[in-house]
Length: 273
Image (cartoon, rainbow, N blue to C red; front, side, top):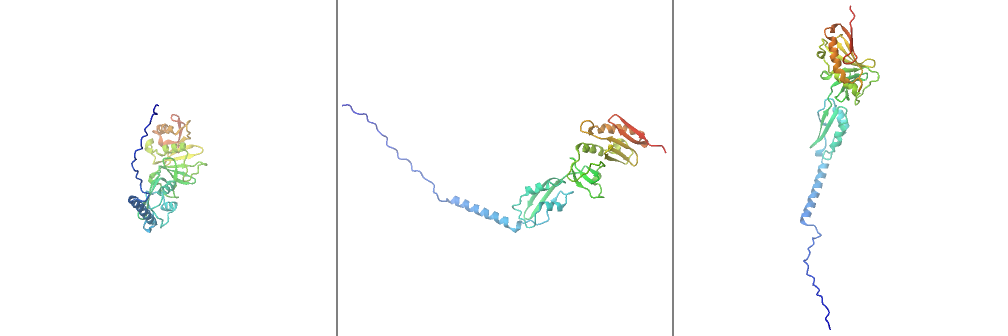
């Protein structure tokens, strides 16, 4: 009688015991939680402490055209406001919206000071209209209205805009073509024309466009109107050269000049006494 095959079943090995971490708080965790609580209490105490409360006035730096009262009104921070939690980025964004301000920074200087640093726009000319005289920066933005009778700052050139449809206000921008022409003509000096004039007056009118008048009582040159393509302000240097040639040797006798372009111009002599 044949024997049935047998199969040996391996006995399972005894596994290593697995250690499980205790569900309770370790000493390290307890200390960490304790210090977190202390930090929270410290922050709360600093935020509630009157030692770090704002005291006016605001420390304002870099303000020449901007009035301190306007800055204080715009920030609207009352005495006693806690400075620890103050959001300064939002305050700086408000100040950057002022017409005379190019950029602004607001900082908290503990224990109780707010420091505001302004970078203001710089005027390059004065634009005068029926609504007043305005300081204009290099972008053509009118950012300050000069008080009536106020002196012209730093000898800036004045552009007198007598057009009927040319009212201006603070925060408005001048048409780019007119502004380009105005900056070119406004920068001219009598020496650039080899002229004996004491000064030059730039005027813009509806019927003649840009004109240049030499004072006292010498001559008037009509430069005309400018457009983006057909008659751009870039032709002004050529017109200036033409004007210089027409005045050469006869300036005292010339009454008026018309500059059609950079090569065509006519002049009229003063009537003889």
